[in-house]
Amino acid sequence: MYRRILIGYDGSEGGRDALALARGLAAIEGAELVLVAALEYDPLATPADAYERAVAEAEERLSASARGILGETPFALRTFGGAPAPLVLTEFAERERADVIVLGSTHREGLGRVLPGSVGERVLHDGPRCAVLVAPSGFAARERLEIATIAVGYDGRNEAGHAREVATALAADLGASVETITVAEGEGDPATVLATRSREFDLLVVGSRGYGPVRQVLIGGVSAELMRRAGCPVLIVPRSAEG
Image (cartoon, rainbow, N blue to C red; front, side, top):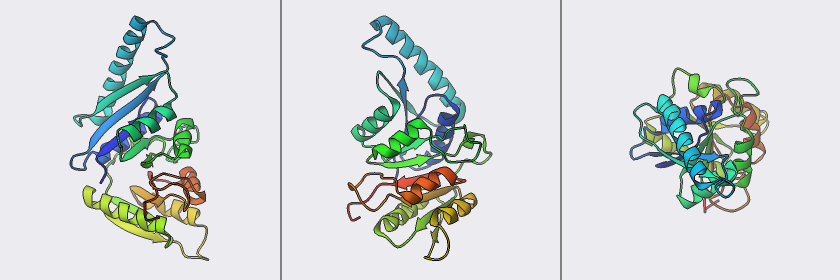
């Protein structure tokens, strides 16, 4: 299912949360973890020797901190200077045909919440052509990081049907269980119901909104609300060609 996994990593608390979550996906046979870091150094405005030295130091620091979370799990690190992180992530993901981008949440709003920071928000609104997975703040400090239980939000629409297909395939790859959560009309606000039930699971899968380019992540009302309220990692899958 997800073999080419990109992680937005800058050594921050949110970056460590993303890395800890991606470690769970590394259980997928053949999965490849690629850490992507946008550096503040501009190669066009910095002398070549100084730029190379700064990049080498940054790569050493980021690799060392990543090993502290990933342990023996293999990974590659790619660094880029002179471009904003959202652009780096979306362009690299498209060029490398990534299956999923893993991001952390901001830590400003308290632990346990899925609330993307400025980089995550920009990536989500730019509509990458691969799935986006967001870790709640403080995820790296949790005792259990594996993904054993998966929920999928379903409302009968094509996008939700595709999300259920993705959740089922991902559960098979991870040896996890999967449960469909259906919120029928009159049973309450879908985002509220899903956010409440999300605390029971290791991962919540939802579809993109029902219009826009295919194979692209597009945030709709429910998914945007879940980004603020879910108690577990949230995976937003892009629209399928059949959507």
